[in-house]
Length: 308
Ligand code: PMP
Image (cartoon, rainbow, N blue to C red; front, side, top):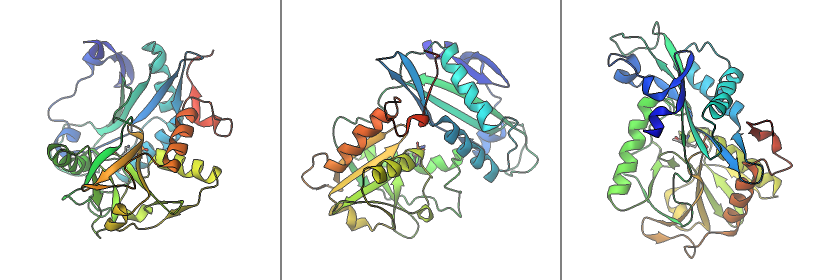
């Protein structure tokens, strides 16, 4: 009820979510021709302000996704970010918020194609604290589903249709009693989780797959790499073999939703002693400060909504 009364942005205007509906013939619904983002706003109890985390980078990525899908958004990333900021004000949010911006092929046209189908931009928001329980270590499994290859559905475009792949893996994992899945890519190397990038720590070195491993170019991943470098931790991007997971010192997921979520067990094997590792702890603590604008070095990434 509350959710339906929240203010969203649809067809060029701010309106209550209950009025933001689409026709059943919409191209995006029939063919998954929609690209989306996922962004957070963090409430800071001390100042009672809300900080959007890297909004310009999120909307730049959305624009890049739309280019891959031959869309022509009429708004710039900066204009989209302004709408997101305005949505916090119009909803009078003083809490943690999640944003779901997207560009979708909005015409009622029959045929799976990209050209000559008009698109439209919308955003809805919701209150959101944890998406994944980060108070304990996750129990995860390598999925029997392979990650879609970049030559099947472009993995660096967040395309709605590609998320059938994530849904298959997530449900398989949860219905088998696990918290989350880890995908192998088409070559058999580690790629990512259903909606998270993955990091491994071995002998004090932070390792994450290269962009060629059919992964999304995660904004949290890029943030964690910057933070690690600033902490003097060596970062290597290279292919990771499946069995490297079992002997890693630390494993964690990153994502807008998941934030920094550590893994305690993979395929019934404890990671180290099954407790949160020191590098994960250090990076997670710094990340949770950073998103509320409390990191002097990376202050620009946390954009305040309210004037004071
Ligand atoms: N991989 C996939 C498949 C995702 O859906 C997400 C969530 N957007 C991520 C990684 C993490 O990306 P980000 O840190 O930008 O949220």
